[in-house]
Image (cartoon, rainbow, N blue to C red; front, top):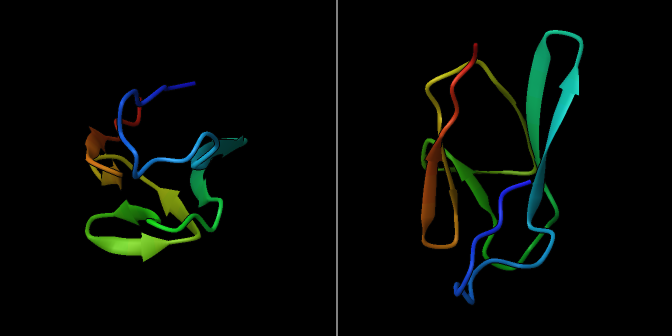
Length: 65
């Protein structure tokens, strides 16, 4: 779990990472401000590695390993 503190644009359960075998997806929870991967608003998207995930003002890079 990652907590983004002090950002009014991020809801308490904004999105989640889903792992199924070797596949990883991010799932947004239809929040007002959305979940973004590489600048595209998403509800569900497979992650391969190197994607930039944005929630509110926070930015993360997904690293596959």
